[in-house]
Amino acid sequence: MDARTLYAARLTTADRAVEAIASNSNLAMGMVVAEPPALLAALARRAEAGTLTGLRVWYLLSQAHAGSTILRRDLLGRIRPQCLFMSGVERALIKADPAAEALIDFVPTAFSGSPRVMCAEVGMDACVLAVSPMDADGYFSFGAANDYTSAAAHSAKTVIVEVNPAMPRVACPAPLHISQVTAVVENHAPLLGFAEAEAAPEDEAIAALIAEMIDDGACLQMGIGNLPGAVCRRIANRRDLGIHTELLTPALARLAQQGAVTNRLKTTQPGLSVYSFAMGDDPFYRWLDANPHVYSMPVDVVNDPAVIARNDKMVSVNATIQVDLQGACNSEFMGGHQHSAAGGQLDFVRGANASTGGVSVIACRSTAKGGTVSRIVPRLDGPVTTPRNDVHWIVTEHGAANLRGKTLRQRAELLIGLADPKFRDELAKAL
Image 1 (cartoon, rainbow, N blue to C red):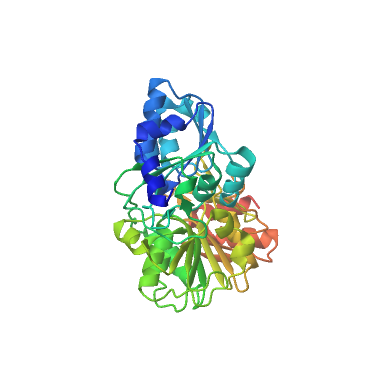
Image 2 (cartoon, rainbow, N blue to C red; image 1 turned 90 degrees about the vertical axis):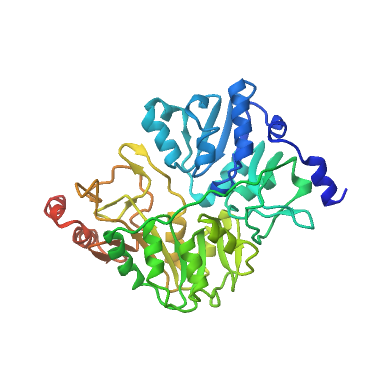
């Protein structure tokens, strides 16, 4: 059959489509913008009815669609989250009911390793995801979510796509063909939108320091949060910047629109802004759609430190929660609980470190909880996300410190200088 005939044969309702998903199986859920709302609602209805139990759902960074359906508190147990990156959804569940924490299985994994863990080591029985409409040759684009989603869709035994005309069509190395799809559901729904928050004065001060480290021709990776946007606003006058980033945002897109990004000097995919997943607003998604200068790739490629390092002058900017006096960073654990995950931080720290002329920056405000808690600490309260051996620059609103080649005492002295002044004497006593 040709592609259109196959499509018509596999087109069905969400409730009928999810009948193919078995109890006690492993299901991969599309990430962030690729969460399929109609399919997730249908799965929740099956769980409510008791016809779906023991379903292990594998994912990172859950959003509102999952939070209002399969990750509801009353369904935990019948549906067992296998979470590789905690979001506000899981944090809210645990805050409302501490007993929920025991029903959410957290899987520590670097973002770059998520396709291997999910597809090669565990094996996905099924995958549900939102995709762009099919093209004339029978291919769906992964749009705003290539990441692990593409690997899961290509390897799962059962693949159910939710076709959304709002999903941007973005070129990628291996789009999904209709012949690989078990069932098709159509649902024209607004994409999840993510507003850019206003940067605090501390973030602006940090951004000013980081911007000074970014020269013409640099290749950029920016993490999540207010800070990357503040940095991007300060480098709009740079020339021939490149983008190789796990997350593509409106702030990075504006640099391309302003002419600061050309990708001309990149070694990997020259001429293209490369990303693994994207989050933004409607104008951003429209900019992505059919943009010939943008390319999405799986996260095990984008976040491979060896691939990252091939780009000269790679600049990696990420945030952390705590830095100890030796330079180790905890970027994922807070208040005695898993707060997020390692994500791609260490991938890009190591990739930027190995890049010719590369710069790795880990930034944080010097305090938390309204200035009552120092983020520069004698010992971390959680796991080490980025080891002291890998840390290059640490930046707070009080300055920037290059820890490369520094002794333990030199590091401690530099980091105390980045702490809020009211905590410096106490930190010095810990030396």
